[in-house]
Length: 177
Image 1 (cartoon, rainbow, N blue to C red):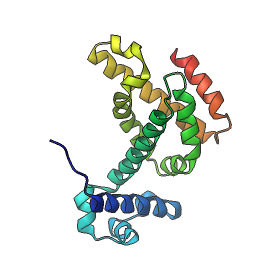
Image 2: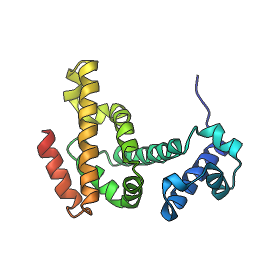
Image 3: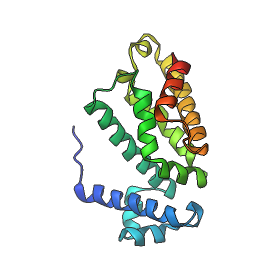
């Protein structure tokens, strides 16, 4: 059974995500109300609650949209495991404003929470090494890699992205291989 995407629902979700990003540029996350978010998106609260359970779920939706964008890029460019770290840091360098917002609002942990799910979806790209592991070992490996990438990304952003994406990718490969 296939699930059909309702374009109006997707548009409403996207409007709420964009409204959240716009509001976060002007005020702290904790000061943003759902009513304010809905007003900025031009939608009613009922529509918000049809798609989301909280403000944090909007941030997670933004992160998910970014993952879809990144995943499409690596698929279209046929990026393999050894090129993945460079693609990763190059992508996040282009979205540094979003990472800064997450850090400033103590929301960066939401990114880590999603990483394990993303890595599972990317098992086929990560390489054959993961295929030789049991499901339990794969789960722990994804958790370890997700935490490591998340921590490196946060440190890099806090340091002002002074190292190039190429330098970050090189360090990542050294650490993981």
